[in-house]
Image (cartoon, rainbow, N blue to C red):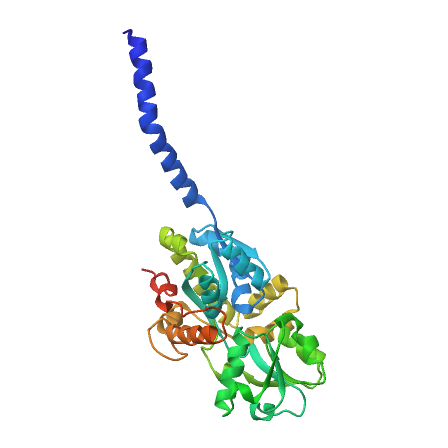
Length: 333
């Protein structure tokens, strides 16, 4: 056999051995270079991510993040379809999407609702007890339905003491204007629209009355959380910087201005919604990640929401709560 023939054969053999390995390395490198796609929507604890984008903080932290803006339900649909790596949603809705097959792990707690979710009542109704025998509109199975049940229980009433009227959240301002509807369960910014639709209406119970009933989280695809753990840790550290910027009196006005611009409302109007969110630092989140019962633990709160979801046939059987919660990224480990 000629030397050049031997060389050609050896070259082909090496190509067969080395090419697949080179392609595999290239694929891994390409995956690592991809942006982390985070879906977010119009709620203070989620719109706050826009501050980091405007300030260039993701780049400073050395993590490539692409924020994608959606309506809330559309953001969950995108996550379910695998179009984004993570989505901003409530702990209860993480269970809902997971029960349908789109599992996630809650790696960061952004805040807990501190007044942005509310039971709005018409003039003349001063307390939850006044709702007995009356019609209350709410989107059945969603978080403000749970808020209503919590309010009724504290007032010594049962769900059967009121007549529930099921309505989509974005339709509640129009529903509230109907003469036979005494109250609605709704969250901001739709709550503000409802109060404009019914002059003189006011909150008679809010999420500030039960801190921890509604946690807002960053829910990540489990495969991404595992494969790109170091990058997600960087993302959580950026969140800490965002919270500091919002809470610092010297920069809070600019923070609200940036969020308001993203949501298309005035800074003055958006400030009210920011006031209804208790933004959490990483240190504060770590304390909530401790296992326990009740609303002060995200484990306890999520267990309560899970029972609510099953009772209201949102899904058929309880979810494995622990599989949705992993404090390691918030802990930076």
